[in-house]
Length: 165
Image (cartoon, one colour):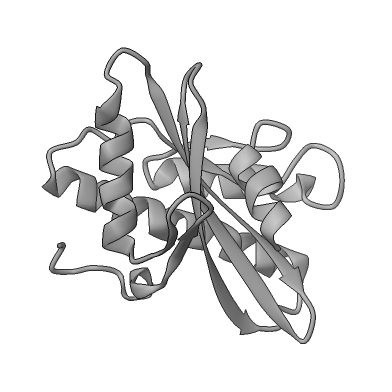
């Protein structure tokens, strides 16, 4: 376990396959998944989505896709006070995704597992009110060392996390 673990990684992650899991248990599952079939490549995607009511509910999804052989996902929820603007919510979604991804990278490095193919999926796209955020959000994600995908290629955010909000 990393000594400088980011504080919100103490959250519970949920898996349709394994039920409620700690962050460490999720990492164990990721390690089993990526080392279980060396013949097929895999992608590890992290994306967040949010929904506002009285408060703002943020769902962060961690999706593992074994190329040509299925997928698995985990998700976690964080509730924050209401965000006044769409721009602030989208930024917070990106920050949550990057925070989780960095923690995953750190844990995988401790276990000597390569994590060079982690993608951040953001719930923004060329159509709609988020198009003005594309350049700054994708620049921020790339600046943190991750590949970035926007709609319609951002399935971890715009499909998995969105379905859970």
